[in-house]
Length: 265
Image (cartoon, rainbow, N blue to C red; front, top):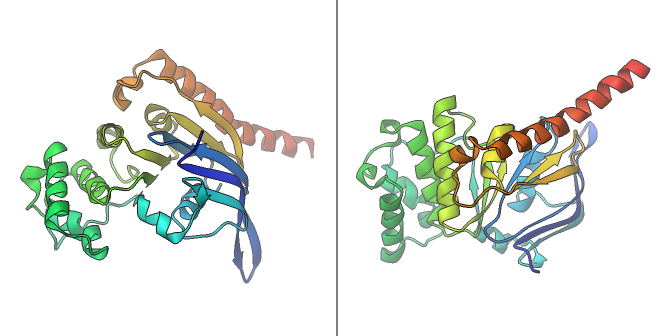
């Protein structure tokens, strides 16, 4: 079976005048079309570095990254969209003009792509706000606009780097539910980096747990919720609690091992 994305024994280190700092070690996993994966782990374990490798902002020192079974090249990045912690909407542009930004940069702003942008705005409840400035929208609506700005470029894969972390708790829950539903409705593959274990369980089909630096995959947890359940609905199931407890135990194993090693020494 072919995969949309595949990592084969990928390792990466940062280099500075102080020497080499290993960030990722022997990373191997695959992602299929339409699959939603989450990556979690302790701070500094290489989660964002992994996204940088996929988006071609960095290159692996060892191993191979395949996109559609071919080595990842710069032109493949055109099929990859990136959603950051901040929405990076420009307040001197309207919501509609912000959504056009990527199309303008890639010289793809045409009557057809404008019509598609309008369709997405209408479909996801922002059409009536298209002439508003970002400062006039709530945090959740701004994130929805940022996602539409990415979707209008028709990426095959979405990279989400802590996209809800700047929101208050209540807004974070509803926005994660919105964004997750939109991604599934559009049939997109996605990789979410998050520190929030509940967020990972509620959104992902599979969760990759990274170890402390240099990060390697210590466990992959596959969830099996009914497809029709939203992220919020998943949180109300017994399975959610079971997956969360399993993930919590895995995340705390490193700390327990470090404590025991210190006690022995």
